[in-house]
Length: 467
Image (cartoon, rainbow, N blue to C red; front, top):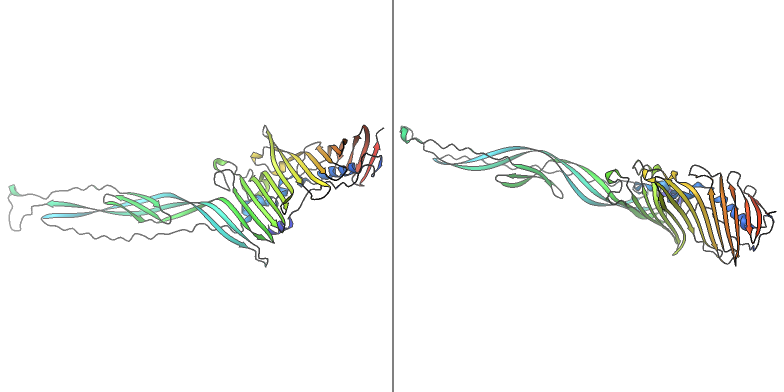
């Protein structure tokens, strides 16, 4: 991942309209030199749909779809809680039974109780580990994991409970050699003792497990023998550090509010928020993504992981140079429309602002369909200029049929509006053939109409007044 991060640093995947530095107050018939604005527009229309990855939101992740797996930033999972053991009870008891005429007997009642119980102990644990590369680059990253640790403790034990009770007897014992009179003979009293069965429950504190014993003689606890099964529920995984001179911060956190990062309650598809920033010298990128693991509910299988929203910003110093956003526009009966917008602010004297917007159709993303199900229905490009005779440009490409990431556009309708300033405008309506790489249509300005044709293979354009 580290090498891919370096290779994809600040990579821009869209070809934008060339800077127009030619003054043209009105069109002139001829070849190429007649109207360079229309030639540049034709090239832009062909470039807009020449690369299908440009309108796929995962294309703007540092590591592509691999970044849609929170475990991608953890090279070694933190170890689970260690199992704990408890000592056994070694209490011994002395038993005496004095017998006299006035006899007080101490009766020991032994109860054998079998315990088979399960208790759950839950705690919040934060682990911090330092990851370093094995080469000499001194790259390192601090990984922090917040997780809820639930420990199921199975108590299987046999408990012996010793209770004592004293019983006083008043007996008349005949002396040796004497014959007791039948009328004066008193036998010993017969005493029956009923001892209730003790209650034993399993309980735990922060470190140990005890058997809480409640008996007739009182309440006490003894260490218990047990085994445990630890289950960890992550709520946050983050890392920060330096990788190949790039300062990074990445954090994955629970987005659906159940405190569980990698799964969801009631068999719902879990949601995750990714917040990240990358800095290199005077350049900085910030990234915010919300996504789910798709229909298989497994983040490690990123093929069907689905992005709900994405926001990315590039800065040079404190000046923003580019913004990218992928957001839902509206829902219509199970069908959702999204917009992927690229906003570019070049720091030069001619181009003030460039905006490329891709209108996408997504069918039922809640079912866990892949991002390949995004279908392009329209591409729109707009630019504003300064210190030039061209004031603004507005260009729309509408494919004849929806296209996805695995298909290519064949033909599309093309509409262009050009504002030269001071009330002078131009309008073009025509079509784009992506197979033959040609653009053709009619351009009108100041009441005049012109036939325009452009061949992308030879890069030659014809601009003739319409007869």
